[in-house]
Image 1: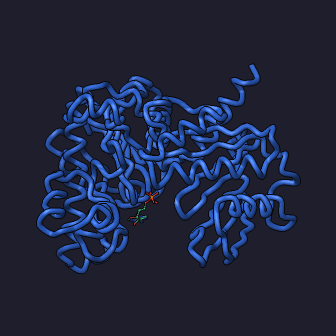
Image 2: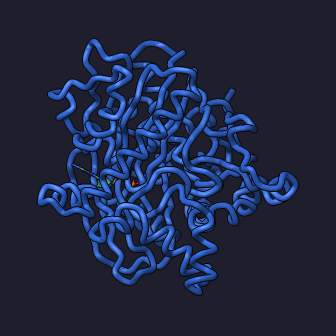
Length: 400
Ligand code: ADP
């Protein structure tokens, strides 16, 4: 069974075709800078054929049309006919409180995704555009499944997901913590339990990338996570500020005369690592600058590691103990110095790293010593595979 996995972002569309029985990636690619004039398209296949094109892509429908064309291409494709795609799995950012698992997409589901536009204004409209484009471009028999980034976190208790704001207001306007990166944290939880052959673990999953979040997991269920109603809450990120005093917003509005768009822009686009360092949101740039003793690059990295360790401490309390800390995503998988600095904060609790193993990048590895009180793992995340697996599960259930 071949599953097309689509991740329709605001200006990019990433995709993979996965043969789900063997879990082999047949092809993967990206349409980037959609509707920005200088779009480009890249596709790579399992046998290392690669095509790159610079062209104008106006919208998600055109992007998906292009993807189909190159999946079927004689020289660069992997399929003979479009019917060889058996189902489509979509990454959908926000499912509100409606969805705690993936669902087969029908008109009702589309209405709910639309209802959640206000909760995920940058993502949900594009996710829906991708779904509707597939309805046009594929046969009407094809099944489409929505896999929500928020679904895994729906097991959080009320005391965890509630803000200390007026109760009725929150209820009426669906103001609560939802959490994101759920598909990644779920993949990490499953993989960790498989590696350690134990489903009852207390896991702290650190998804550290351009966007970052931490999730406290017990017995494969989410107990708490750092992102909230929107993906700004929690850790400082590439360009997002993470937790701040909301009083700062009033200060900026009242004392600096900033309007909402300007404040939004600061919080989402010019804060975090970029804002602190004034150099870059990219950890590689910051690490290079820190080596040259750039004070602000060093400060950005220090703040990131401190705040990550602080949440790990808090989540140890939330879980009533801890068995494993897992690092994933671009920074978690590759930045050996970030992992080291975070773990050093936990040295007092007997968390010990094996330096040699910690020097590996982008690979599955246990990098704690045998004496360490907590196991430390790196697991490369694989959201696309998780979406494909869930799509297969829904399709197989339909057949029963
Ligand atoms: P996104 O949230 O966009 O999916 P990623 O998970 O791809 O982001 O993470 C991107 C981040 O990972 C960037 O800040 C990048 O600098 C960092 N990164 C990637 N490779 C390395 C590396 N070798 N060392 C340090 N940081 C790295």
